[in-house]
Length: 187
Ligand SMILES: [Zn+2]
Image (cartoon, rainbow, N blue to C red; front, side, top):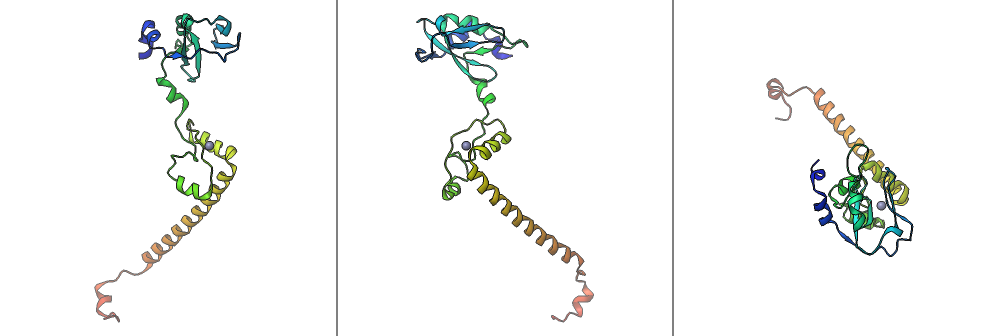
């Protein structure tokens, strides 16, 4: 993998400088791996802090710069790195599908007219996740949209049936021929 070919020095240099983790309680875990390596806040000193990102979930942790080389060298069973100082993969892992009630939604105007709240959640990985969120978190909107959808589907079905009936009746009508035209009563 490309990112794995990157030198440790490069990753160290690119590390984003983090705020001093004043809100991290002493002894609380700030980074841990399944290899059993755990860092606790008591191990942090004032050497400066940087952010590292879980390469699979994108979860961000604050890491003391002194600890960074060790953290960055930790690997999963499949050989991939646990943490990276870079975030590029994160967007992919987090998902980018927006909540139906997101301000950017193409139907926002209509939703405003329904009095729907706005929701800024925008990291669903699948439409199924998004739909589940809508169903559980925005009950009123979900029910309204369901009713509307059902009505639209009924209307679409009706129009389709109408079209079909028309097409069928046209097919069953004898095609006008030259013979019919000569004796036509419209003439
Ligand atoms: Zn939402």
